[in-house]
Image (cartoon, rainbow, N blue to C red):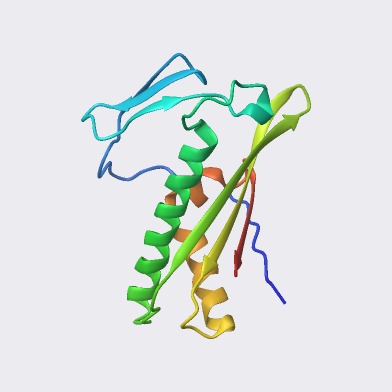
Length: 151
């Protein structure tokens, strides 16, 4: 049986800024995004399913999913180190959906962790702990539905 974790809590205020990323978007969903250091420089297009042209390019939901997956993987590794757990290979798949919420638009996210070298119960406990410390999870908690589970 798959356990899904969905949590809410109050906002957390940074005690200290350890790093700040800076990116600029030009042209919204049909333009480009670029980081101040030039590491990321991408064309952005609205997906065809949302009425876009279907031209090659990324979109905000893909960028959010990529960031969340990477961040959650690091949070999981952090928790595993703190608990002295050797996980073996870990992969996190993030799915970010967009849709109407009344007159506005909202997001929903699903995180699926693959940790094949751990017993399911231990993997689920680790994923639950990672969801508590992940900055993306903390940023979204109480704002959007985030389902987290082990594959």
